[in-house]
Length: 204
Image (cartoon, rainbow, N blue to C red; front, top):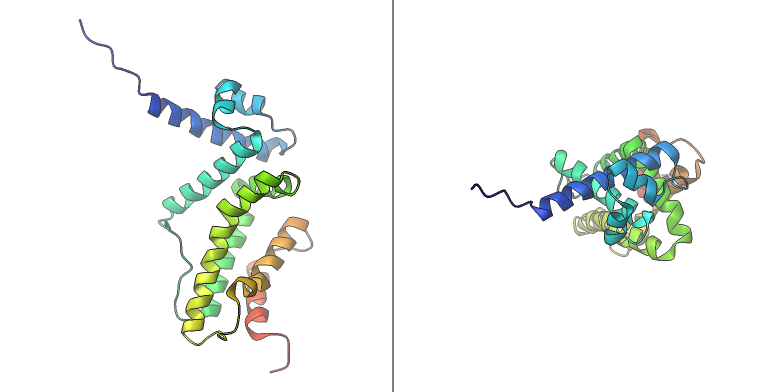
């Protein structure tokens, strides 16, 4: 008598988790966050909603994990894990390059819908908002801090400048314009932000 292979529960769980991630991201893009429900995610993923609630307390938590996983997967595909802001010795060039990559991501339909949904939900759902900041935003901002500190070490930025505040001169305007649709985002726009941040507005 031939023994039947024992099902691999870990592999099955990972397959279900991936399907749930894909379903959540697809539904948010197709119908928007308000109409995305746990029931709809479960139906799209081919699992019971009890499976989702066993792993996540809400649809917001599903979406956050799916979005973080999408970012990590994309970085792996591009060979950019772990990601750091390049240090070519030219701070302006490096900042412009990473902001251009950010523009590409913000305009990518795969990222835009879930990113907007999470940003909006984080404003009214404080625990999710804190988790969104801690797991997604702060690690990204830390990259800017590290690059600005290396520029300080090289004498390209004043030693009294606080990198955590300085990065907001170019990161925050981009985020505001994207979130509130106050204007188009483009390479030209982010390049200009870097120039203004590094060189100021006073006559030279």
